[in-house]
Length: 335
Image (cartoon, rainbow, N blue to C red; front, side, top):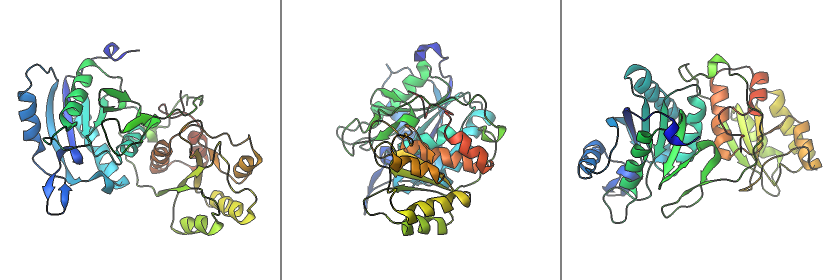
């Protein structure tokens, strides 16, 4: 179904979080700067051929470099989106965000905003607005035009003329105009037939404590134990290949078993750019499943991280969360 099938945006709320797009020089280098609304308005007025929807602007507080993004800030973003749509009557939201953690935030919002009928689009830039060869205005105006043409309800990522599904992409380059790429991960996940009311976008969410751990040769149980002692509720375990790990290390497996027994949800994703996790292919994978590790299938690191935050933050029972992890909620396990 192409974008023109969906109604055009009429009223867009622009949420400005900071990031490179609006940065200006400071004594310590580029830093987030206020006053971007006026710069945006001046630019759009200078481009009369651009047809964009009506928009209003909200500057988030604090403005941040996206390297400082946190799950607590995601809560602010979710509340700002809900306010824009349900209180102020906007049908679309454009979020301006730094690129370093943009894929994390867009994926997280996909799970924080389940059931939202409005369109949410993330964009940013690799160079600040106003500098030579900046991509800022083309991304901002392109995202507005895309919303004006009509997008499906839900969360989108727009960059350099391309719309990407936030739960299927990652930042793969630190330079140039194409930092984001759809990862060729396997799909085929079973779609959830219904979602609990607690996951709906307008329900309050709690902060969850989730960690990400890439496996490496020689990793020991003390790493897992340290994370468990820190009070995590969820863990994204970045495994080798199709979901393998040090299965001949009984202490490592015992630590993962303790995680399961203490209610910590552990999800395996692959370190590979393509493919996904199939825990039953190799013994080194099936032993992980045997101590309670769940298969993340073809989920990206960012999607699995955001999904655990969404599920754990909704206050669902751990047994139910474990079921939902392996079901497709918003395209994270689809082709």
